[in-house]
Image (cartoon, rainbow, N blue to C red; front, side, top):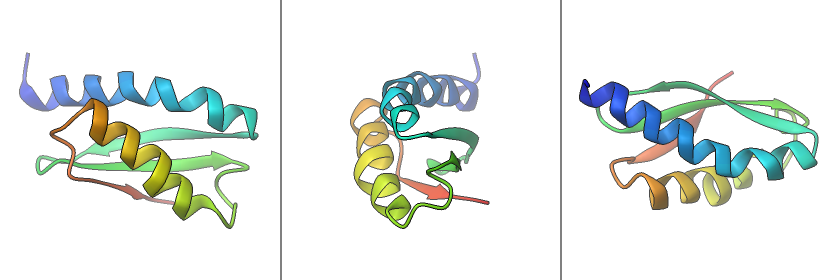
Length: 80
């Protein structure tokens, strides 16, 4: 399997750990892409999309979890 696809699968699996908490708050997260240099781009959906705490959720929740489960990840960015 190609390394990029393998990395993307690891990220998708790790995102499943984050989803239940986001859904309890009326939101969700969608994987947009994983770049060659380890940047994960996500789209925050539902209540999370317009929440004033979205940047905290992104960095302290999503990025922290993904980096702990997938060490190859360098950062997580939100896209619209």
